[in-house]
Image (cartoon, rainbow, N blue to C red; front, side, top):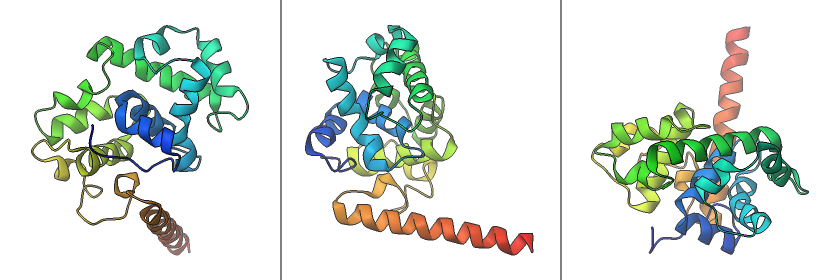
Length: 198
């Protein structure tokens, strides 16, 4: 993952961690719901500060769940729902230990094609269908993980030039454009629902 730089948290140290630590990136993606994306992707860096060590799937999986929830809950909490998100992150880490020997990058480095990559990401705790597609698009667009068929597997988020998701955020400017596009899509969805309800 060297040679690229993610711009998801807008905090240099946190973005550097996301760029260089696959586990940090997966944790940030898990936390990216119901809070601002910058806060979600800054959380792995803050977690390393609270733990006093680098992120390690085996370490996080083996921690006492109440202790981990307390770490997530320290003010400012790492998420709007720190207890449930601590559980989800712990479940993610346990799966990484069980299936990938604790190596987060192994989720994507061994995938033969886009469908297999999507299947592997979809199996991770906290990754629904849409989030899994967005993550595959992020890997392809920004981190050079491009097995055959990755764009198709991540459609519509893998489309070149789209501004639909975190996969398309490469600067403060694109972050604003993606946010505006998401707001417009939400508004369209609400308008469509209102139209069918009448």
